[in-house]
Image (cartoon, rainbow, N blue to C red; front, side, top):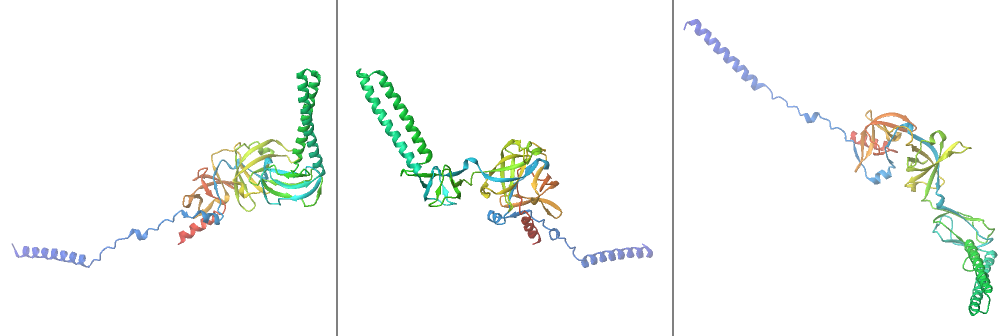
Length: 382
C-alpha cells in the first residue's frame, strides 16, 4: 500500500467514526417524545337523560301526554262545557203542599240513593193516607162478601149471579186499593202518616238547597238539587263544516283555564245542526275527569279520524324545545325523561307536526317541558 492509499483509508475511518460519534451524541441529547394523551383532549358528550322522581314531576306540574298520529288539519278546536250525565243529577221537589218541618242534609253533603233529605208536613198526606186505609178496608169487606157468597152458592142457596157480583166487587176494591197505594208511594208519604218525605233517587252531592225550616211550600216546589260529580260529560259545539269528520271513539284533549289537560274520547255526535247557532253538538266522555267539575268551561281539541292523513305525529307546541339549535321533545322514561331529537314540520292551532324522530303514542312532557330543558342545560354546564 502506498503512502497516498494509507492516507485515504485513514480519512475514511476517521469520517465514519465522526459520523457515528455525532449520531450517538444526538441520540443522547434528544429529549423523549411526548406521548399525546387522547383522553385529555376528548370532551364527554352531555347526557340526554334526566332523572326525576314522580313526586318531583307532580310538584313541577309537568303534564305528560301521548303523541297523536295524524295531520294538523285533522284536529278540530272547540269550546266545551262540563256537565253531569242525565242519569247522575236530580231535582227534588215537595210532592204535596205543606210546611218544611225537618231538614237532614245541607248543601255540599253526600247523599245516597233512597236517602231522605227533608220532611214536609201536609194535610194532603193525611188525606192520601186516609184514602189508602179506606181502600184497604173496602178490599177486606169485599173479600168477606165473596167468601160468603161462594159458600151460599156452593150450598145452592144463592144464585150464581150474586156470587159473580161479589167477585166483581172484590176486583174493583183491589184496583182502588192499588191506586191509593200508588198515590201514597208517589207522594212519598212518611211513616207518621202526616208528612211527605223528600227522597233522593240518585247518589251524589247536594249542589243546591232551597229548603228552609218552617217554610210553607206549594206542591212541586224545588227544594234540593243532587249531582254526582264523578259522572261527567262534555258538550262541544263544532262548525257544521267540521262535524262530519268526527267519529265516535276519536281522541280528545280537554284543556282547562289553569293549563291542565284531561284526556277524553268522543261518545257520540248528534248529526244535526242547530238552526240558531248553526253548530253541531258533540258529546265527549272524559277519562280521569277528577280534575274537572260540572259547569266548568274547557277547550276541546278533537283528533278527528274522518279527516286528514295519518303520516305525521302531532304534539302540543309547548312540548317542543330547542337545545343547541336542535328541536327536541322529552320522552318519559322509567327514571325520568330523555331528550329526543326530532324534525318538525308545520305549526297550526298550537300543535306542531313531527316529521321524524317520534312515534305516535309515545308519552312525552307537554306543559312545563321547558323546566326539563333548563335542568338539562344546567347539568351540561356543570
